[in-house]
Image 1 (cartoon, one colour):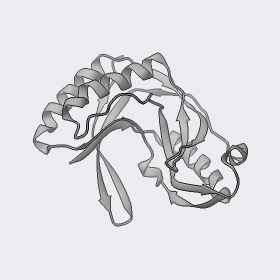
Image 2: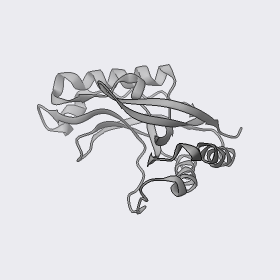
Image 3: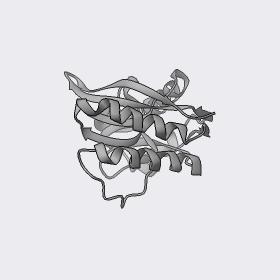
Length: 180
């Protein structure tokens, strides 16, 4: 099983992300659009994982969820990464960073590839892959609104990622409620 842990979004947040993604389209010279149902924020990518370890993984994630309280975040800016992804960034906080670090530490023993930990975590949602724009991105982003309505993060999700006929399919396996 190819697994990752991430934040799934309610319909309202996905609708706002879709509006931002649609605003990119007139400025796009090429790229692949991420389907609305696949929009998420990855907390930790595990890669190929033995399905026999699923129960153990869920126990570790349940423990991590219990150590963190609900918190607020929101979408605040767009970016175009060197790998060609056009994204919306999420507001970070000590609570957000702590959750991500805890999930990463809990999942590291199960991960197919060990991350060196050198990269700083930047919470984001990918809207486009291999995005090429008709003008410099700093000009494009002037025309792309970010619909920032703060929302509460109350849980995170364990997803399975598999290749389908028209691209990747992200299937929620289970979710983990944060503490009150």
